[in-house]
Length: 210
Image (tube, rainbow, N blue to C red; front, side, top):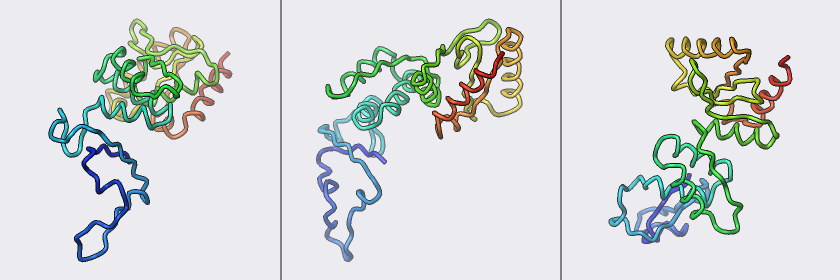
């Protein structure tokens, strides 16, 4: 768990007993793996914040400095997709937030969700050619067109559950199949759980096509 705190929250900097108290109380933040992010902005002066929330720009800046590359890309791409930042704003924020010793990261602005980011990064690592968010007449945007021969859709439950969504998905699949391109649908939860395994499934499906 990562928590943003003002610099004057000094007692949380150590594991010393919290006193006065009738019993010995100690902070267990190290035991539970709590990561604290300190800011020099006084609590009362922070805009768009409360005791439990910081603005998305500051949260993203903290993510860029402490998280692995894949988590950083997924977070920033999701922020762009949801309209919190433009692609250029997200790239500038990311560049400013990462210390000079860290390798630069170029955002694509094409990932519709964090799960899509995970899969895109794995496909890139395997050298598999693909396009993202490809517009198709009569179908709409497809998540991935892999090697021009396979559609891959990463389905989150929230947007692909229910009778209407089920029927719409099958209509899209049929429309693509009529163009000679089959569709592989993968639950977003599978991608998040093991994106490399999912990428291998995509490759195996691609290799099995005539």
